[in-house]
Image (cartoon, rainbow over all chains, first blue to last red; front, side, top):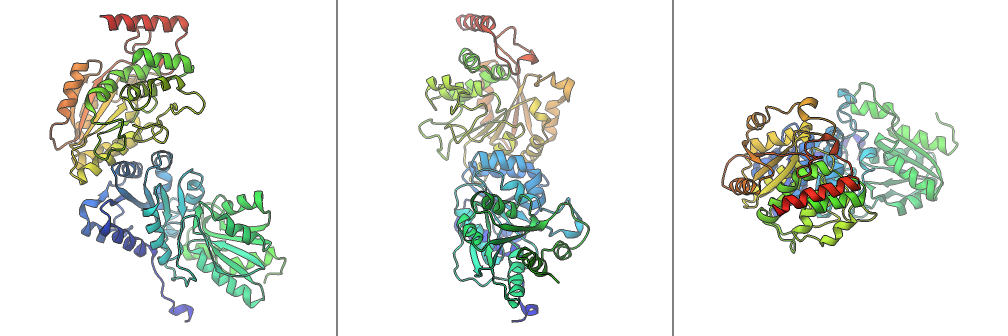
Length: 316
Length: 262
């Protein structure tokens, strides 16, 4: 199938399908939003379960606190809002009311990363992973495609404790997988290779696979690992990746403190290895999501170039 | 309770005696007479919820929880000691009977609103009480929650404002004025009542009335005094935190014993 014909999906659709399916069979499932019924695509949920859609209005601190209160009242709340506001505005509620209190709250960051490209740094959510993975007891998941998004939502509902699921808005293809098993705390090897390992998650998984294709044509065998679970981290897979002698990480966010930081921390203490951390450097210029990702090397070519550079091969 | 919590603070060498003494009568009335809770079943789904939004006043809260049977009174001696379950701010993963971890101000009311919405969805008759400091009402999140509670018509929610008019460093009205406080709550869709926060009979009557069916959340503004019961602490902002010395402690206990004897 040519790339142009590959169907693309908005992971929000998989997210709402999963939440609605859960709500059908479990009356404890409720959705909490900050006026984001539309952007969270929860209109159908509201129509089907009107008493279980709680819209607190534009008030993120209250949204997360109410989520913790609903969990206290026996509900399983899916608290959804643009990830830039959910993470930053309600940070202390996430820390104290959800994680420290060990409340059974599921936080869903919508339109994450640079989905709101042209709207600027206020609306980019590239710091969320660095912030949230620092919070004890909070599971942090970044799914890569519709199937994994649905599985992450199901796993979050089944998990006893707070979870953050970062949901992409950028259209992505459905990956072909060898095994259909998702678990919080587990990554997956999507492609074998012994020259280096590319560890990515979310939207960058697809670009990492494309980079591996480019490198394969040059005789470089790149392993590609999807590390959807950042907290807890799948350190067994990282240990295996480190044995290749070179690791590139790639994510739609700050590499400093994000997935790249998480992998680098573990490798520094346990398996020192050459690394390149690909991600955004900080506040970004005006541009679409796709343009920003290409501009900052978060593309197949950019990942391949980082790999060649690390292996001491000439680029260009 | 007052004597016990002052001993805890003296033994621990730190604490928040002013706010503890301000909230003591409210907590005693709730835990010993009002709340439908069972220490043997602290997670019972149909229990009333009490949310301590002013989480720094653990001297009073722990004394009430121990008195209600959630843990042995002897454990109060471990207050703030290494590895104690009696942390400076309440922690539900340490102790039974605590609904949510508070301490940073502005957190309890949103959680109480969520708990009340859950009960509303289930048409359950459990009641949610939350105790907030008055200075805490300078936090924006409290008014986000107040606005939403009014919008939802949470008739199963009662907030008690510990209106002692003092915050950490000064009077609330000199810092960031709260008045007209009752009007503010009414404007957010709440019923408002005043009560003497140190009069058990008045508190009992107010809390009993709070359970009557209604279609709005209720704010009870409790007229209180920081440091109530100890003459040199009463209405003194300087006793927000602090530890009485041996002479002050002896005087405080003497005063509280005289009051008990009366």
